[in-house]
Length: 346
Ligand SMILES: Cc1ncc(COP(=O)(O)O)c(C=O)c1O
Image 1 (cartoon, protein in one colour):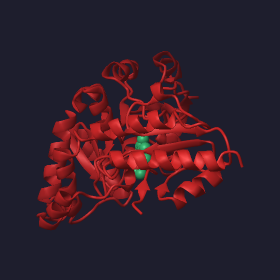
Image 2 (cartoon, protein in one colour):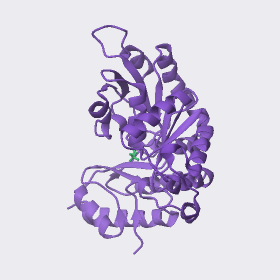
Image 3 (cartoon, protein in one colour):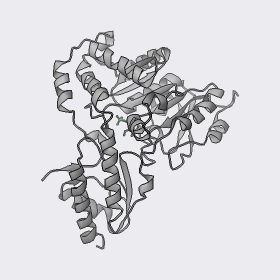
Image 4 (cartoon, helix red, strand yellow):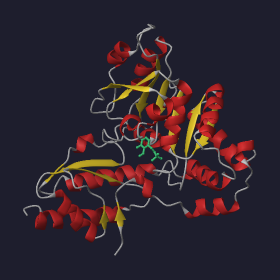
């Protein structure tokens, strides 16, 4: 039985070309800036995102953490959305490790912040207040259905931030999905941001790694924080080699994941007991609701039939990626239809 793993795009395996590049990679000690393969990847990433410099980190969480720590000091605050990954899914690292407070504003259903609310939330200098040291947005927005922010959306927040001399950070874990969906170069999407983190290990299929980009001064600071949180790596060219292949060969194909996501959403919308809003589908994240039956039982039954995914709650997320073919989508829909028919009334 072929397994169809829809839990996340983090389950992707490196491509054969990546494995070959990893085997052949020239390496050095990156803490001495001596790894030629990593130096090449960082230069490529900075250029691709239109920023001066880049630093490789172990994960998206580490990328966001070192970005916050570089922008903010103890006792400062960052303004982020209530549904964003930095606030909800990174174990409170900014406050636990950095002494940085979160000032939370509502994300709208597209993952956007209201620029007027951001302006009102930025603290004026006053002995009673925390200093607002960073504003963070997320593109694509994971919890908001993989929604994309346009360059205009980002500019609207950046304008407010910069008017108050506050830097803007973009959590771009899936920024290349946004770039492909909006048919807009990634540098254009982040041109008004001061720092950006993006993941190589999600839709781009690398085994490990994320990258932070920004000004040379900012990246020097981030490099120091990365060392402090234990992220200084040695012969990291082994994994950087996969990152180079990813940037060269894996970006355009994300369109395939988006088209499989559309097909999946369309099919799910035809299955009784499932509720989905196909117009809320933007990239490769397919959110829907199991309206009828016990979601825990339905999850167990699809898992038994080779479809990995589902939750014991009503809101589900299926994610398309490099490991999912159009036939896998057909198979998933068939299984979902059977299981919903047989188990949604129990
Ligand atoms: C929007 C967003 N930011 C950051 C991360 C963190 O990435 P990692 O799992 O590599 O720490 C994720 C992971 O899913 C994410 O969806």
